[in-house]
Image (cartoon, rainbow, N blue to C red; front, top):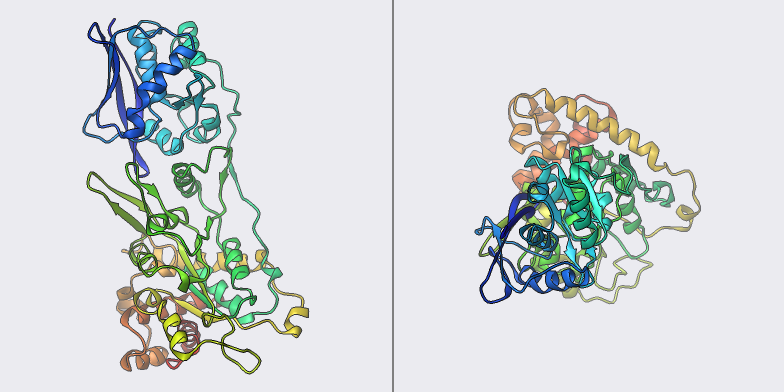
Length: 516
């Protein structure tokens, strides 16, 4: 036999497709060539495979070996095809049974010593294999726990190329192989989160965080250093409901693509919390890279919280890049050869000082910034981005009396109210013909709240009607105030918002400025 074949998986975003790996041996000038639109890392597989086979005492004849990754029109990125290439060559040499490996997906990089190393993106790759009907997958031991989270696929971890080939020789198809060393029992688990009771004082900010959690609203916290902005943002995650199994799988798939899920043995049902440094680049925020397009911070925060501390210090193009995912819940990264879309439905939390020096204004504070510098600093968060932030509150410096006070509500207590409010919202919108996908108030289109049966009486919306007429609110801002008002009513157990709910929503929207 001069032709061997097996399979691997090519990833495209969170999806993937089966790749046929064919190895043809001929009596031409010796060499090992990889074809099928490989990137630089994949083209270098010839040297890794040759060295790994020699280190594993496996036959690699002095023949011309052409490896084709099919379909050839699909870009192949990374070193995850090494194991499949080596197995296909050994099948072509009749060193292992041809039919035993044909419908087995191989995912792993080969070391020069013959070891099988882990690769990023194993979870979405195994999910793609399962959807394609593949029942057996060979992965590196470090990726085995992650791969076993997928139902309906037998995962076989191997430490070396020698181990994989010997198992094929002795046991045939992987369906007859013994169980791997990783336990089969996996399930959901929640990671510990900080408690809201740790926050001293800040009654208004605590209310804002609760409202943001209940309705999925974006949040802006402004205040001097040390007032508790970061503490409040970190505790927002604990107020959100646990992720469902499918949502948790999507979140872990994104982490897997980033190479951050190799040690996972349980699905983490706590929503993610991502806090990039203010020096983050555009690609780090929205995703990108040459060759394989990796997800960025907005996708890593999918179904969780994206916290931008010192938000005005982020570059303008990075901040403005958030506008599309805030509206659509996904981010699309375009390259010359491909366009990849990642999910990015996150809750944005911005934190900012009142001015560059951080001291702000007030009798007891000494600000050293000029008026022009303060205006320039504040303008970095103005415009279309800030118009998409529903809740904007000031977090004052903590006083001595507030620091000594005790008895703030714990996360578990507030989370119960948040869960009840979310359940009320989901029950309400699920009864509407067009609201099958709406689970929280922030997902409801503004036209639904302004027209038809959900339109509030003019006596209830008079404050925001006047603000809209005076140009103090945009129509987008008007809709977002309505959403917050419905969330406020859900938290209070009311069937619809009243004038007080709309007034509170407007106050939270405008940070107590003129529109209120």
